[in-house]
Length: 152
Image (tube, rainbow, N blue to C red; front, side, top):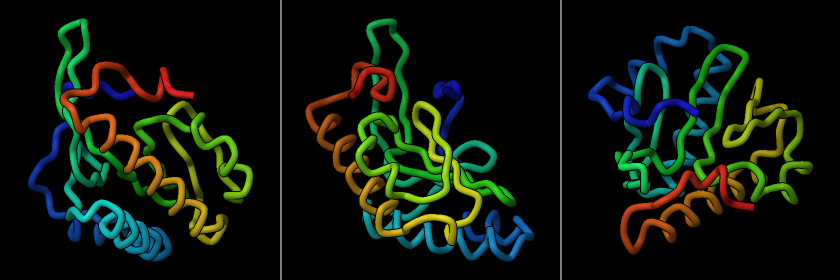
């Protein structure tokens, strides 16, 4: 997991960043994900770190004293590989992931080569559920645990 103490939104233009990707298919796929995630979250995209595009934020504060803010949903586009972040983890979507199409996963990431390799309505359903879950968990204050490591 990236060190979220270093993950911060910045003022880099999302539009300029996407245009700089250079690969026409990655740019098209990014536009689709931008529209989907903005519709789900109701928030405009913000750049996080060098290449992550995030939507909305939540605050976390762990017993260890570590605290900060993270994006609720987001993705990192690169040529031939798009990472979709599910901050509550991929385990919670074990029933939907087999229906998604060609992808790989890690604890909180879905890796996709091209959106044409997957069933977009399934991805949208997963992202929407993830967004709603994170928002419900953060409604009463900071999230107190790394959700993708604890949620089943």
